[in-house]
Length: 98
Image 1 (cartoon, rainbow, N blue to C red):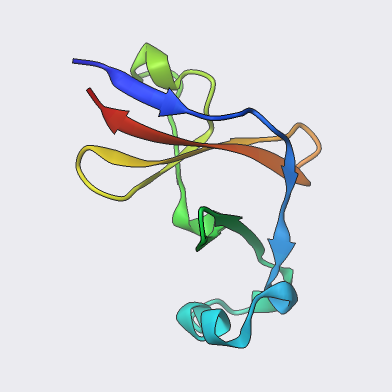
Image 2 (tube, rainbow, N blue to C red; image 1 turned 30 degrees about the horizontal axis):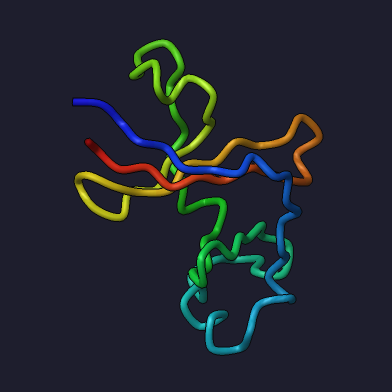
């Protein structure tokens, strides 16, 4: 049993809190400085960068070695993120267990 990872490896830029639709901003009212928080819109869903858990590269599945963070949608699936070296952008992928 392994992981299937789907991505186009395109580099994308983060959204800032002030760029979010008003109805989405209410979902993140617990953040102290919403306007400067980094957000992602992927497949119609908004994610805060703080929604992702850092991947420990010392104790991981080899399939995840390229990626920096994970957001689980279920026990078997979720979203992966790779941050750019400059920190202004990212690559994103969907994963699921085979």
